[in-house]
Image (cartoon, rainbow, N blue to C red):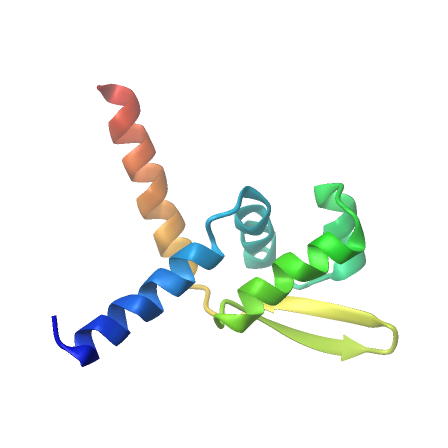
Length: 100
């Protein structure tokens, strides 16, 4: 594998790793339905605001979500809705696995 290919796969791995937590998967799913502020996501997930903010920072750092500060609130949106295609693929794998 040459350096260019290795870099591309390392980038892919970073994105997959960022989504490899149930809470982050849940938040991405919720953000696909529309923007949410940190407080709303905190209430939905049931963790403290610091933990939710850290999860959102992981997703933001790889480009999955974007944020916008409005007054004291920070709102998040899904930056790349195509990630939901990945979710559909994951669901297909789960269904295939359960049929075995």
